[in-house]
Amino acid sequence: MGAFKMRGAANAILSLSKEERQRGVVTHSSGNFAQAVSLAAQKLGVKAYIVMPKNAPQVKKNAVKTYEGEIIECESTPQAREATANKIKEEKGASFLHPSNQDEVIYGNSTAAIELLEEQPNLDIILAPVGGGGLIAGTALAAHYFSKKCKVIGAEPKAVDDAYRSLISGKIETNTTFATIADGLRTHLGDRNFPIIQKHVEKIICVEENEIIKAMQLIWERMKIIVEPSSAVAFAAVLKNKEEFATKNIGIIISGGNVDVKNLPF
Image (cartoon, rainbow, N blue to C red; front, side):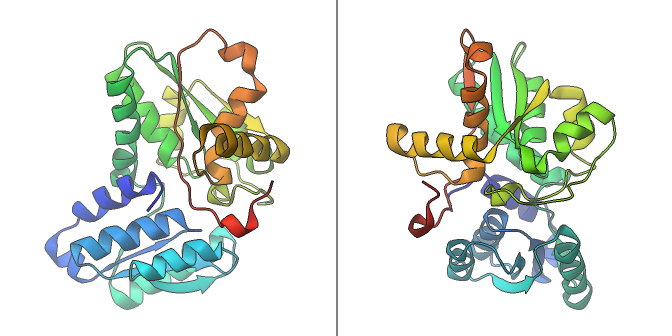
């Protein structure tokens, strides 16, 4: 389904009891976790209720339907997503799967960095995008337990820099706007992820919208890899700080490629 989210979704559903699976699962997502839960649930014979914002990319909604997930639309704010998902949880008895702020999801996400370190054990740094924090937290745990020297750095759009500000203040900060092209990162930092990030993430680099688009275009044109804006954020951080990374062995997690090719930003 074209994104790392399948790792966390599959692990979360596999962690449920037989009785819990029979009652179904519910999540809220702008797209990638929605697809991941739908596909994992379909393969395991589990009903999936998917809360999606009305303005989620149509290509992602279409994929959810293909995987037999039942879409319930809501407003685009995190509060609206959570309220709608909680309502379905109460009405259907479904198990709620958080897109990022849940241990089983974090552990599933960590396998991307584990595989990267198995292939490239001499990495100095792994960079990953930061939204809710599930990928960067899983990456940080993987680097901590499976590498003696590899550091982890997060990358975040300047327009939604709550994780960056949270590391500075020492408490979870919130976003007042979600005006970024990186739709997969329009969310709040989770309280399960934040302590892991505080302990094991070196720093977070913020990038501007034009830098995200430039990085995305370069990946498409030079690397021949289909990526969505959210997935280009970590590479944008490297391009912005070339001197810092010039002498390092770097691994970048390309997190997803679910993009509407009819509406590319470049």
